[in-house]
Image (cartoon, rainbow, N blue to C red; front, side, top):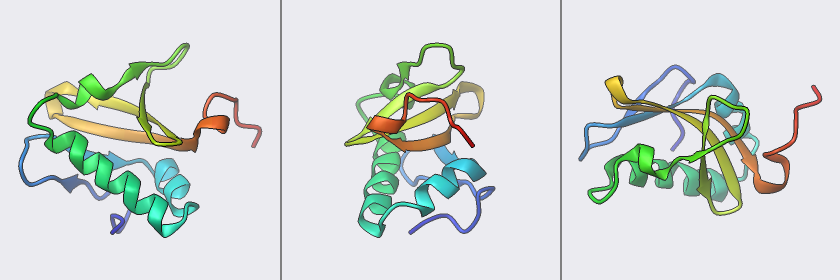
Length: 105
């Protein structure tokens, strides 16, 4: 189930980390099919609840960007890890083919 609004923070039950979607990421997610949305939301929960890895360990550097890349199947998420708040902020959700091109809109 999607968070009710872009400002709603979804806390995960087991760990101290939480994740949230920016309004842009919320729009990106809304444009996907329900199974794709569920896959992404489930994986975000797994990332913040992982007993084996800290959430920032899932991020890979993105060139010329303040964000890190998180891969979920064919999707690429641009995220920021706020260590002091133990929060993962998802800025964008894109399919792999369009994730590395500039937006034209």
